[in-house]
Image (cartoon, rainbow, N blue to C red):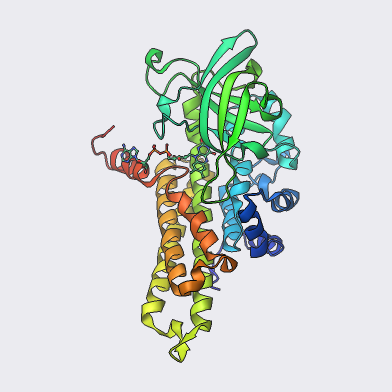
Length: 387
Ligand SMILES: Cc1cc2nc3c(=O)[nH]c(=O)nc-3n(C[C@H](O)[C@H](O)[C@H](O)COP(=O)(O)OP(=O)(O)OC[C@H]3O[C@@H](n4cnc5c(N)ncnc54)[C@H](O)[C@@H]3O)c2cc1C
């Protein structure tokens, strides 16, 4: 296994690897077959404090930055595990931390840090709006001390395994807003109270085990005290949180890429065909070496984006570029890993096919590659907008 000589947070990485060794391939395969949630794995990460690294010490977390959180997720993924079941517990709280009132922060952040409360559902995407978030139609109408929410969300991960959800809604119709991104607001929804009282959660079965759901709101009452920040400014609050999400997803891709390269290298050494290890053939070596080069290059961009984020500097473009490079590098590594394993790449017991399916997601979610290229073309290079 290649070990990076100047790897950040070596102690954290070592501790994460040790924890992950209790959750081997058999554990994930069994869950995958049943599309079941990895409760024991998430409980172990919570108990060890790895999901509260981004919460300031004043609220019970470890007060570390995105670079440390990235190290945790990278090692989870390099170990063959998957952080998708709980990575949002790390960063979703950022919307409350940066834009919530002191009362909201004091009420929930210490409980998120201890694991008593799970805030790992984040409801933005809608079936008809797609990536064009300004077209969301889920509407919250103010009614005395509450909002009444009606509408629909799709692809909301972990809603069945979360106590709270950050929800983006319209509070002013798009046509009546000063500009399309105005008039949206963020509500903190208590899912324990909402389900069955105006909120229905329906699971969606997908090619990977990701606890995806569809949400239906039928006059759901949410206390007005659960509004985060100011009404009408929600789009900006959500964008802020997306940078951390993209950097952390990119670090999972780096972990996946390294998993595939570790496995491909080991197999190429041990598998003998035509009387010699297949890894002696340059036709087998070069794709693995190329995958390593691509993952290492992507890693530099992930580190750069994480450092900018932790320094409080603008990092939107770097977070996007890191996510794109890392998701493409992990996908190339996945494809080559299957190829090196020949027929065994398709066998469940090798875990390659499972990780192959899992890493494919990241070129689509949380933001698809075309939208990143469009951001770079117009915001970084100043080319004319196409939409
Ligand atoms: C497993 C999974 C988990 C998810 N979890 C969550 C979650 O927890 N919360 C949440 O809010 N969302 C979640 N999502 C939604 C995810 O963020 C979106 O699927 C993603 O952003 C793409 O949006 P879309 O599916 O609406 O695609 P669309 O917007 O319909 O786009 C479809 C395709 O067209 C391309 N395209 C669209 N417009 C243009 C254009 N102008 N130029 C070039 N190409 C274009 C896109 O790049 C994409 O490839 C999840 C999705 C999945 C699959």
